[in-house]
Length: 286
Image (cartoon, rainbow, N blue to C red; front, side, top):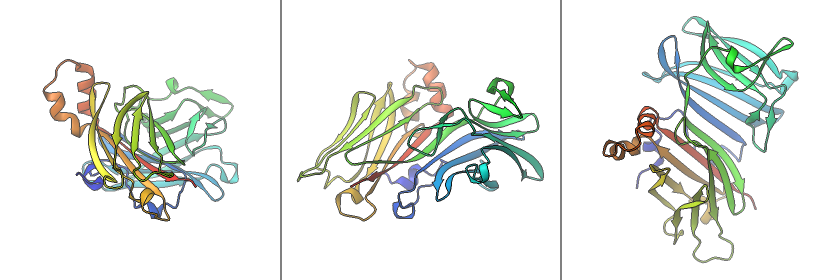
């Protein structure tokens, strides 16, 4: 069985042991981007804190892994729903612009609509998220901002439930948004099982879960292989954390498959350029 550490060595999202998170509402996304003509990794973390919600941004050099800058914005504190901030990157100014004054949220800390976060270096957009930015009294659409070629390569999310857990993700940067369902009913069962559905299709069922509480398997989504790893030990054996970890990974695991198939040229091209890793911390709510 492959372990989580080996799968995450090339992603920008770190997975700490579940006890360190304490059930925090958190979404963390890593993007492959370019800054001053060089490849970089931008990690954006949305989280709920004691006094509201927070946004943290970190930029790392892709080739060396060295940190270029880190900053945190707490727009809900002191009514800073929109604003800007200049940070130093290699002795130059990088502007961070945000507008969350009309942001719409669901249950989690990440806005779904009506917001914009932009990292701009001179006339170069390093990363642009969302769909609206208000400068002064005027709304500026993303079309008016410089182009950004950043691509999400990893995502970590904390999800909650009793029996059924859900999340959404794209396994290719230009691919379809998939609805992911994790279902595990352990109440009154001597032999619980785990089922994973993507869309309406069951892609994985793990029986004898008390013996197979950790494992990995390759499934196929839209004809492309996705490697799935699971660790539900804490669900089954009474840990106070009651958190299971699931990992879905495309890209590296599909290289051999793609090299033998030429029937989906566009999907092959996208999959070779950018792998994607999704990490779900599934917290059981009693």
